[in-house]
Image (cartoon, rainbow over all chains, first blue to last red; front, side, top):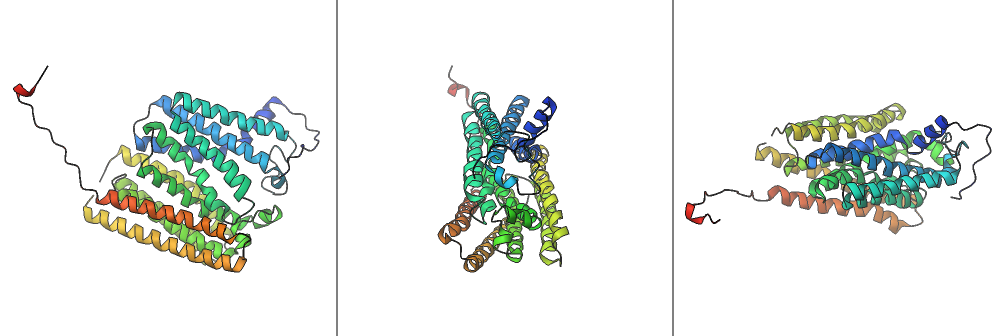
Length: 302
Length: 84
């Protein structure tokens, strides 16, 4: 990746447009799910104060937003050739690349300071760990070099539950490890459902996503087994007392629907419609699973 | 929850997880043979490291499941044992 100056543009920037672009750099739609997987574990780990929740939410947003902005700086060349990303602030010429990297590093630094000062050091360290993993391990190294990019890269998105847990307890335990693994194993079926439908885009950008390298059949096969693994993992914490009956039933119902969706992808003559369904539902699945954890702790049945 | 239900949930989930992990590794072996990547050892590491972590976490969760319950009880102190 060679950072290049933004193309000339006749668009006159307005303050509203700049704000809109700065918010777009943080990828707010993606962060909303990350915040659910950050805040829900706080209520499973203990009884956080409103102030702590607010600080972790703000710190988490800034850290993840910073990582996303740095990602847009590093990926500006491939964003320019992919249909779904060519309207981002750098490829569209609305923002200078150097301003984007400064913004990303700036808000991530502010997040580190804020979490370390007002929450605790383990929380700041874990959030920063997620930032580095996403920027250097996923974006810089794996994304363009391995079809298993999102398998290992999924660890970056799995840091938020650890951040939320550490904010309340100051440490990590077995339940926190399971929350990490749930997000980690959720990532491959979710992103491969998208990759199946965006193969041309990824091919143009020379990103070696699994469907392009392994073929569609083998990718869908792995989606199926990753989903079974995920659903199995979600119920194990019930066995050692981390969650009760409300969560168990929720995990089984939500997981059953996800399995049915991937089964349809596996057996349909045309995978386009069912794989878009899996992509959309898997977002809802993860959010509802984490909400179920909180409800289970609020209503301890079983 | 009844301990029998907990045992069924645990072992059924572990069986599903282990079967799925084995099938993922088998699929990875197939694709690595077919695609002949530039760095096969690294690709194998990407598949094996999560599997290893998974086994460690499963063993830890089994130990947490079979951990004997901690009995906590208190005995009221006699007046002579109370020191100011």
